[in-house]
Image (cartoon, rainbow, N blue to C red; front, side, top):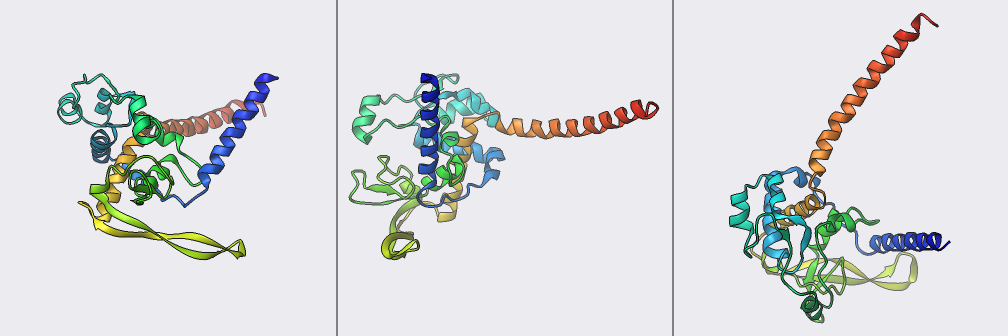
Amino acid sequence: MKRLIAGLLAALALCSSAVANSEGPAWDKFPKDRVTDVAALQHGAKLFVNYCLNCHSAAYMRYNRLADIGLTEDQIKQNLLFAGDKVGALMTVSMAAKDAKDWFGAQPPDLTVIARSRAGGNGSGADYLYTYLRGFYRDETRPTGWNNLVFPAVGMPHVLWQMQGEQRAVYADEKDPHDAAKTVHAFKGFEQTKAGTLSKADYDLAIADLVAYLQWMGEPAQNQRVRLGVWVLLFLSIFTLIAWRLNAAYWKDIK
């Protein structure tokens, strides 16, 4: 009985999480073709190590797995290993959990499977990350000076602001479409207030590469699995046709 109750509570928690994820602004669609682009994955790995790995760990991923996206051991050592770690080491950070909580209000989550864990009613985990990393805006009321459209009151600062520049969120009061007597504070878009080192199109592409890497990292065998799956389905189709004709030949004389 206790196990049944625990299972029901867990299912309720998952449903509540899914409903929570489906609220808020719509998520932009992540360009899925970047996941199969080796150059995009390599660029995403570089962005991840340079900008994310300072605070966030990827404790279930080893550096040498980057060979799966075409990087040699020398390239990994020269371009992605900065803390004296061995190429077979896990992608951990040296920042203590207590310090992280003091600085950001919470310990930064591990990112190994972040793209798989953030799926919701608005889209995939990759859609969420693609929208989230492009949704930072200036908010002087926040301790970090930044807020996020997808994750309001987020404790994480905008570490990519030099690339994107600065923007502010534009809101307008409108009538509630469900109740004309009420007024809602509707988001209308972003207004660029300071240019970054990248254009909007180039920044969006860089974020797509970073998210592609995060998605690949959550399941490094995904691309290989998809390619193999096509051949398996093709084999099963041919085998089914042969089995059908063979069965007909066996039963022809009996019938």
